[in-house]
Structures are given as structure tokens and as C-alpha cells.
Image (cartoon, rainbow, N blue to C red; front, top):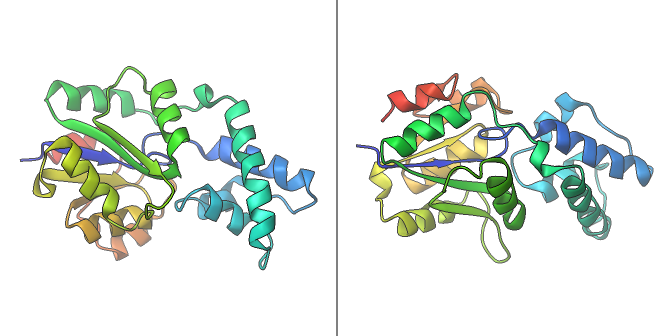
Length: 214
């Protein structure tokens, strides 16, 4: 019986692609770098904002440049209005049903930790997540399984009774590395063929389908 569901954030709970593309493009343009389309950004996401910025910049861009631009991107991301980011259709209803059934809900994302907390509190503030874990200094990012291990300790729910739901390759790999059932979310930014090739345990086309897996 499933007693805990852990979610990725961007592309799974929240449709952040528009704000990601707008903020990154404004900083890239400001510093004379080429900008990208929304679809190109869809291929950049999934491994944290630093890696996204690295992918958006020309190949061979130094770490010093990336380190200089990243705070500008994150500041603008915040200024653009985190509260305007929409959850995907059906997310609120699905979370409400999970809570009603007594299932614990948590978030594991490669988004910077303080922004993960901010997004959860601002956009999905009506829900009390049992844990929210983002990128933190000295802690490995997905697909390392450490975050799922930590959430299992916090929730006191064994991994055998946990599902991890996400839209990207890193999410399926994280679940596999932790020995957790994986649900590939087809409404997000990832590709169905990638999730299938990695062996996602389930593929779901809309949030309500997750309830059937319980």
C-alpha cells in the first residue's frame, strides 16, 4: 500500500517553463549572449538552474561567467513574480485527494532549496508538505537517491510504500537508484520515449491517474 508520494516540482507540479525562459533570456540578452525558444528551454531543464544556464550559454563558457550570471537569473526569477507560476491543471485536486486519503506528500527537486520552499509556500500554500528538499550546498542532486532516503526518514514511511512522480529522466533514475516505484508524468517537460526507455514503472497522462496507483 502506498503511504507517501514524493513529487518533482518544475514540470510535475508547476508549469515554470515560461518564467524560466523569460528570465534566462533577459539575462542572456543583457550580456550579449544568444537567446533561446521555449522549446529549446524544454530541453535544458531538469538538472537545476546552474546546469540549465550552462546549457543555454555557448559551449565552453567558463564557470566564472556562469557564477556571475546565475545570481542575476535567480534574482530576476524572483522579481518576475513567483506567485504567478501556475500549477498544472488537476494538480490541486490530486493533492487534495491524497491529503484526504492520509497519504503523505513531499517535494524533491533540483531547484535551489530556498526557491523550492518559496514556490511551495507561495503557489501551493494551502497544502502542508511533509518535506520539501531542493538543491543545498554539499548535498548531491538528483539522480542521486539521497533526497528520497532523507524524505523516508522524515515521513517515517519506508521506500517500499513510496512513489516518486516526475517528468524528467533524472526523476526516473532517482527512483530507480532509491528502489522506489516511479511514475513518469507525461504532461511535463520530459519526453515519453525517454521515460519509457529508462523503465518508468508507470506513465500517467494527467494528475488524477496517480490516484489509481495507490
